[in-house]
Length: 173
Image (tube, rainbow, N blue to C red; front, top):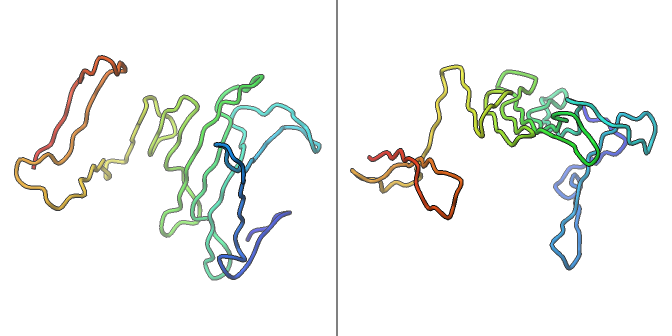
């Protein structure tokens, strides 16, 4: 059940909604800021520590008795903060059918590494499963015929001017 100093509750899209609009002749948009300090008084700016929760967005639905969390997005400190330096990571969690608590499913760490099914990605994208899942790349095209390319994975270098392909895996129908 939601309890907070600021709460909006209603029975329609217009009465249970919040809108932040910025009208300005520039490229800047509105902001929603979630801030954290380790201080103990209003206005404090005491440095936060590694793994501190910086903010959470919780998505909840009613189960007939109470609201239960179905998913959440959280931001944490991901290293040692310093002057003008706040390393961060995002975690994405969902609740499985029949469960009551969200479990982390994906993480983006302060290095930009993405982990799916793991909290410790060691490359740009790390996908970890328990052996029952697989990676699926789907071509949403019903006109595939024999010898048509179904999908391609390209491995390239970081020099766009070289225009060179490192390797290609191509799957044909």
